[in-house]
Length: 82
Image (cartoon, rainbow, N blue to C red):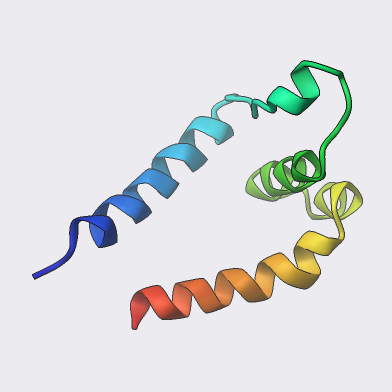
């Protein structure tokens, strides 16, 4: 029998992606309070740019996302599908 997390996790990812693509923004309390960008902000802006298909913009926000994020995403997807 499928586990609830195995069904809910992909559904949550789809819902969050749809919300971001329709203009929803990212919230970072570290940025909101002192006005500085945290390391996660660059990753969030890069992921949002990728969702919109802006590859070069995403690369400018956080090049490390491509070096680490893509292989990690592939490994996570492979483990999930296994």
